[in-house]
Amino acid sequence: MWVFESEAEGNKAIISEAASFYGGRRFTLLVEMFMMWLGYSLLSFNYWVTKIVANVVVLILNYVISKLVVFRKK
Image (cartoon, rainbow, N blue to C red):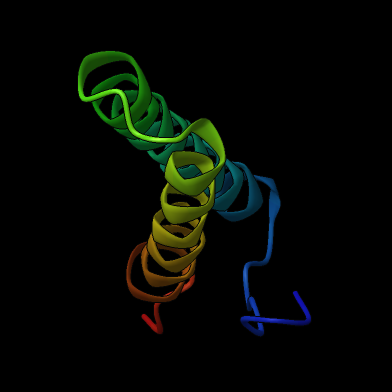
């Protein structure tokens, strides 16, 4: 509501927006898990470097998904 100025009104719109929001978060969780598996488990990079890089990517993806998909102006 405050960050992306959501204008959803009514239960259906709010539920749809919430489902999109949580779906985007689930997607970025899978991205982070994949990056950790690839970087740390498979390629044996340093755990903390891999974790920081994965978190930066997830942070950017969360913003982009929220801005362009979930809270886009209709």
